[in-house]
Image 1: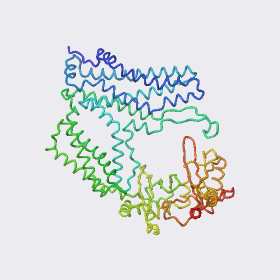
Image 2: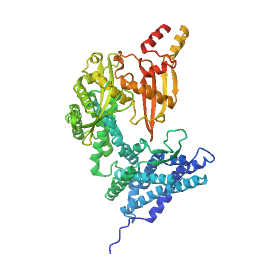
Image 3: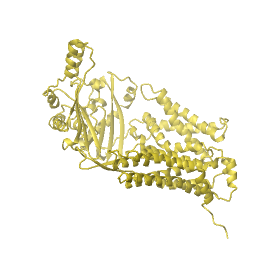
Image 4: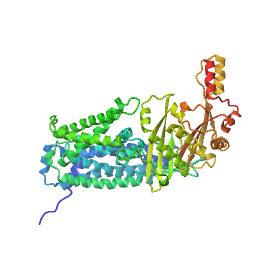
Length: 625
């Protein structure tokens, strides 16, 4: 009868655990210091409570970083014998099949991760219990997060171990696998923004979920719950909870797939490939061209933006040459690594030539808008609503669903596209009184559920400002409509009472005015500024009785998209800033410049504040100097 295939070797398992005990003991020691010992050190601290333990346990950043680093060290320890010819020959002579080696290493790795995590969780619970605090749920949550993250990171490291043939190549490939997606995403979007007019650069983190470390570091991990409305004095935090269980489930599924792929690759691995950078021959061309493309994007864009940007974006020719140079470095570096010789400049020129032609074709397609992306404008009947954010307004996003306003923004969008060549010429101009700029984001929410996003920097000259049909002047006039100007100043939630205004401050830069003309020209005075913090009740009174009517009548809150050209409406050198708040954790702010004739300005004048227009203040400074 044929013997059964063994998938586990107890002898190898025990040897792994004892041989690499310093590694998993160090991991255990780090967590003991961070969790249970840290809790015990706070004994007697009256401010240390259950919420403090929850915040410690659910702080995903250190868990992610420590787990990611620990997983690669475990993989390097368990799979290190792959990369030396002597150890490969010695272990291959043992009566242990490859399936048993892989599965035993997997069980060892899980033991080295899960058992220390379990010990830390139990000791953390005991430490909290000794202080009379119930931390069972927080500890179980941390144990689940740490264990699932460890499973994913080890699976990724195991796959990298099966692909490479050198021990130093393993951590390099592992780091690349963790961060390449988001780096390439960021670089690609910034490169495309120089070619594709209107491309929304906010998409630079679309691929962030493919980089778990970056994704978890850049996301809000906790949700804070309050007694009552969470706004009034005396509100108390009662708990926090982890929000990303769906993402961890996806990582767990990915871990199973990665482990299966690593198992299949290891079964067919050529053991004589020890010492090669890539041990799987069919994947060598993939590595070479991916490495060349990555170097073209990263090194090429870095050179273009650092050394050739000047006052505007790099030109097409400069960007293309930099990309080709980066690709050249990456292509032939990969060849040197794969062939382990510097004699690679022979027939490999053909491969690089094909790569260069493909890269050039892609760049030219983007520059000449072969896909029609730049010219695409939605039809009015297809748009449900438009979200607009523009610099020079008061900070909030404007959302409109009125068909008339939607038509106005579509017309503005078309005028910006039609002025593309002139806008690109102005982008390299020196900003000053002759040229000014404003940024605008247009997000169309279509009736079919799709979202069309565009971003533009709209430049305007003094001559264009005098033309009501120019994109810059057109945009300024549209956003100056009282209804839209009001929307740009208000949060996306109703202001129902003083509790929705967390803070408000009044700033006056004319301060009595300029300290009584610098003590009647005794000088030695810097530009003074006075600040007045308002109570929630005062802020709500001003907002309701003064600010809202002024906004609706267009007396304040008008956008200043092009500061150098707006001289018709003098304003005071004074402002009021509101910070709005609504549960849960919904913040917004608004800064409004006060203008003559407004109720808001008169409110402060009636209370003894002396306000000066910018022109009056400049004239006063001249008398002082």
